[in-house]
Image (cartoon, rainbow, N blue to C red; front, side, top):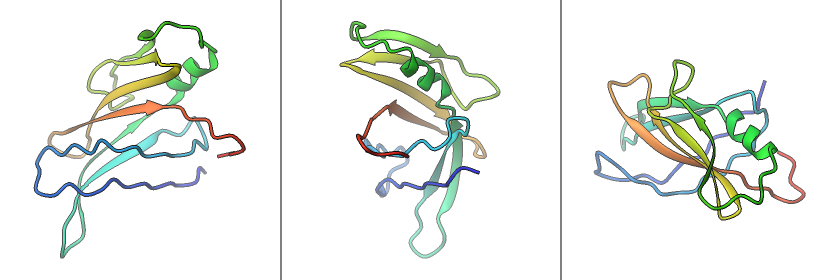
Length: 132
C-alpha cells in the first residue's frame, strides 16, 4: 500500500470561487496509484465540511517524461488526455513542453458534490539525492 501524503493550501476566507495559486509538492511513491484531491469548506467551530473530491492519474504525464523530448520547441503538445468515466477530467488535458519542462493543466470535476471544478497544473521536479 502506498504511503499517504497530505498537503494543504492556505484558507481563502469569504469567497465562493477561491483562487489559491499555490505550489504544493508531493513525492511520487507509486505511479499506479492516482492522486486524490479533496476540497473542504473551513469551519471555525465545527469540523470542516467536505465539498467534493477528484482523482487524477499521473501515468500519461510520466510516459511523456520517459520519451526524453528535451529539444522540442516551447508550446509543443506532447499528448492529450481525454475525459472519461475512468478519470475526473472536465475537459481534454494537454501535456505540453514549455521552457525546458513538461507541464499538464487539468480541470477536474469534483465528485460527491452537486457541482464544482478545480484547475490544477502538474510539473515534474527532480531533486538531486532525493528518493521519494
